[in-house]
Image (cartoon, rainbow, N blue to C red; front, side):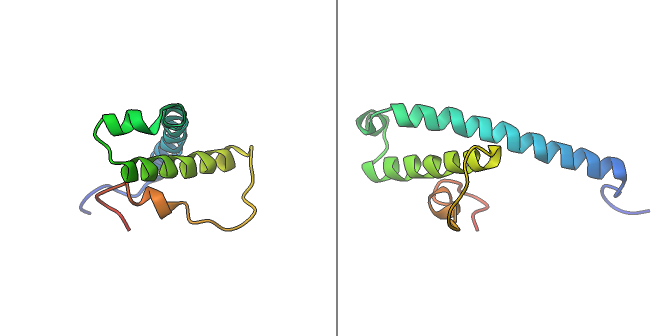
Length: 97
C-alpha cells in the first residue's frame, strides 16, 4: 500500500483540469484588478496606506500580468523574451523564487 494519493488517470485528469481552470480564473482576476489600478490615481492608493514606491511596483506588476494575459489569449505576441516575474515577485510573498 502506498502513502498519499495514488497516481491514476482520474487523478491526473482532475489535477490538469483544476490547473487549467485556475489559470483561466486568475487571468480574469488580473484583468479586473489591472482595470481598477489603471483607473485609480496613485494618490488614491497612497491614501489607502501604500507608499509611492509600492504603488509603482503594484501597478507595474499588474501591467506585466495584463500583458501576459493578452499573450495567453492570443490577442498579442511578445516580440522579445521577457521575465514577467520582475515586478510580480515583489508582491507574491511566501513561495517566491
